[in-house]
Image (tube, rainbow, N blue to C red; front, side):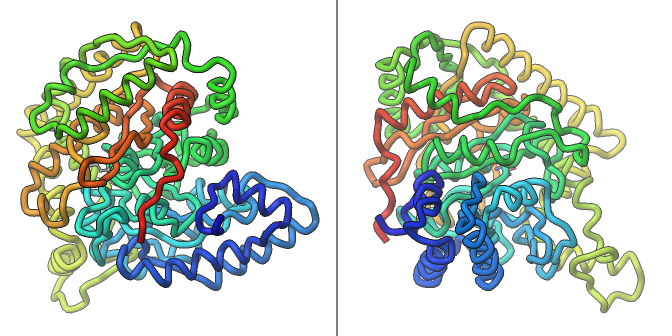
Length: 490
Ligand code: GLN
């Protein structure tokens, strides 16, 4: 096998047996990035010298027989995770030259586990979007078909994992941004329970919805990465002080007991959604049958607020964004327009130049929804819908252990197809954003290719802190379908 094809688990074994060095592994990926990323656009920043330096350090530890979960493994990071000394742009012109003074907690945890940061990946500006077309710098193409989007907003991370331009990556998910691009690019993506992973050093989009999570080749790698990044962090007041299990045990559990005794709910409202692609429907049915074959009992459940989830999300997320993004005012850091005659004009010019169209749209929507006189009608009402969504899930999980659904209504759409129609773009998030509204964990696992050879994923959701159930069922599906070694010809 080529070095760029290795999973974390395989790379770790090879490194520990000294079959190859971390420097060789990193170089193999850097060469591949050099050759292919021009056509994919997965990365915003690559720092080869820093990557080689950390790989050299990792090799020294490996030579001494030292071990750490990610020692010498190259990981890519979505470019809204602060990295000390490496540019962190959020794919925005306003932060084009921003170099953080500190590492996000997850980045420190990765480094402590021995990981090599290979680069920072492209995304929709400030994570607002579903296609990575909203990046302030360049678009990212789907490695399976360059005319299609990779999904978003973590499109760069998903494309990089899919095209074998890194061993694994981190993304963030506010309304689906890990699961949807993972589905569109044929890789595994997990949005952990809200509070499971520290958000300290993650540039906030919508703080009550954002979560960081792994995007990997297979379910095992996601479990390995979760083991590294989960845990209580006093620097994030919303971080949950709960015990972190060894997530790989969920996979062993499948090996020993299969999926017997597991109950999966299928939300009837999801399957009657308008515009559900026939290939998505077919592969969902196939995945369902596969899980049944492994012992899962299926039952119909109801999530009655499904019709209102998109509308409520697109009030809450922009409201929080309008408040979070107020800090980019040209004063403290980032871009400043210095041709203004006074302070107010400087604010206006800086923001108009620095923020792209979608970000401006969200700030305006959010500011409006929060303004006196409209607050109750919009934000207040949306938070009430949110509480009802949470209740719907609570009721559903009294009857089942997991809920399964498609990740997105269609396979990856064409570049440019939805970009001028924000409402259509927003509606593509219908299956993923309710989990964020309820703070629940969700995974996307590849379940096949469409007739046009575009990957399609299955979404599995579980109750709070029950990531082991997602991993166990997801692993069962993956091992049975055997799609994990499939990757696009490029
Ligand atoms: N597409 C959704 C949005 O634009 C979700 C994005 C995300 O999860 N970061 O808000």
